[in-house]
Image 1 (cartoon, rainbow, N blue to C red):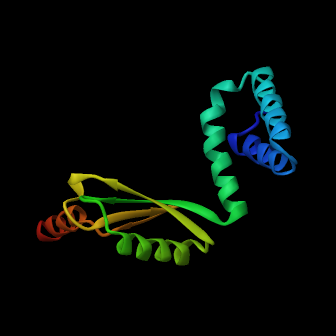
Image 2 (cartoon, rainbow, N blue to C red):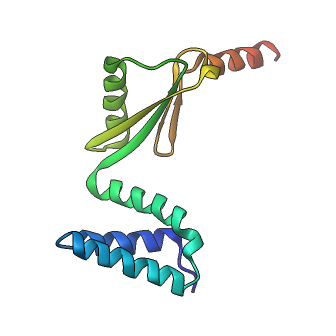
Amino acid sequence: MKITNRQYAVSLHETVKDAKNNDQVKEVIKNFITLLVKNNNLNKVNGILEEFNKVWSEQTGIINASVLSATKLDKETLEDLEKFAMNVSGAKEVIIDNQIDKQVLAGFVLKVGDQILDGSLKTKIKELKTEISK
């Protein structure tokens, strides 16, 4: 039976959360790596870690969000976007990463989990071009 990245991640999460101290965590990780090698799945480690982060976030109520903007957003705007992301996702806490991309032109693109809110000028211009060409 093929073990998915998600299954590995859930298993690792369950084992790590029961560890009592750092030594036990190190032992769990060592055993986990040994299992991946034994199953010839060491090449899956990046995908497993991505899934592990998702599982951890689900269990703790903390999620990551990213906001793409042409310039660095001010603290107040980031706080407003964090509150919005919390409302949309139901998370207790949002860790937001502001990435700069000059192609956005103005506005921002907010990604929270699988949801994307695109308020960028670039997208608005594309939509307007499409509407005009009809």
